[in-house]
Amino acid sequence: MKQTPVLFPEFSFDITRDKTVLFLGSCFSEHLSTKLEGFQFKVVSNPLGVVFNPKSIANFILFTEEQLLNENFQRNDVWLNWQANATIFGYSKDELISIIETNRSIFVEGLQTANVLLVTFGTAWVYENLSAASVVANCHKQPSSKFSKRLLSTQEIVRHWSTAIAHLKSIQPGLNIVFTVSPVRHIKNGVVENMRSKAILLEAAHQLSEEHSQVSYFPVFEYFMDELRDYAYYGTDGLHPNTIAVDLVWEKFKQSFLSEKTSSWIKEYQRLSLQLNHRSLHPDSNDAISFANKARREMEDFLSS
Image (cartoon, rainbow, N blue to C red; front, side, top):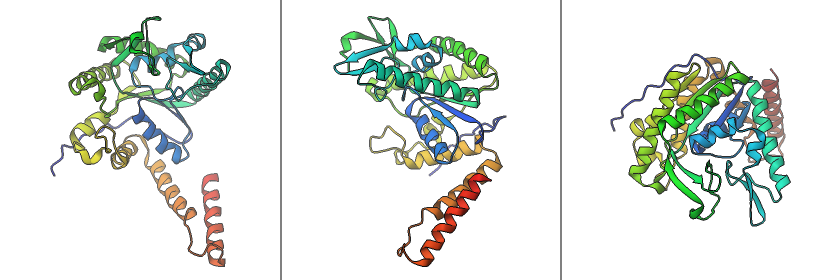
């Protein structure tokens, strides 16, 4: 089958194991962060859980701790936060405050030693809390009457994120920010509405990369729309990329962001991991015990070198 190849850019910086890599945004960023974590990279990913819209993602950076904690509210016997995913919760107000403060401090600490932040936009459709007149990251199953739905504009995203970029660079001047747009289809809004949303996100990401130094774009969305335009690369719902697609993106990610030395390190780590996780048919035999001990020593020596 004929494919339309998507050219991925060459970046002027590398992702290395000695620098923290930060991830914010849509669930697609989780796939990449999980890959890096599996290879012993220093990763801080989505401190407030998966967040889809650009404004709420930026709010995590721009809000003071007091502003963020003011977004806490109680639903029955569970405490939640309007700027966080439902996976961030507490059974008391103090428990939720502790979780948010801890996760935020981990991100800020990681920012001090990070050279890359990858931000994945998921949708430009947002819900505004009518009582607070603010965009929420998650409606937390509250009645629809509490919200108004609207589409963010490109200008609004660029303006909000330009402020966030300036704030990030004031803390870590050497930070490189990479924007991506998630290929996941948000069709609960409608197919046409999803494409309108993606168009806004794409234009905003490109404007930000053109207007700010150390800001760039990684064409994941285009890769799926052109080179991988087949449902064979999606899960059973036809909306989310499957493991085959994620592995293909990972290969593109490695080519774009990892040096030859780092890629070689990953290959050797994979080899040693397979050796270490080998399961013998006769685990208590002398040969099996000797093999397991040798594999463990080799991995320990490799990681300490």
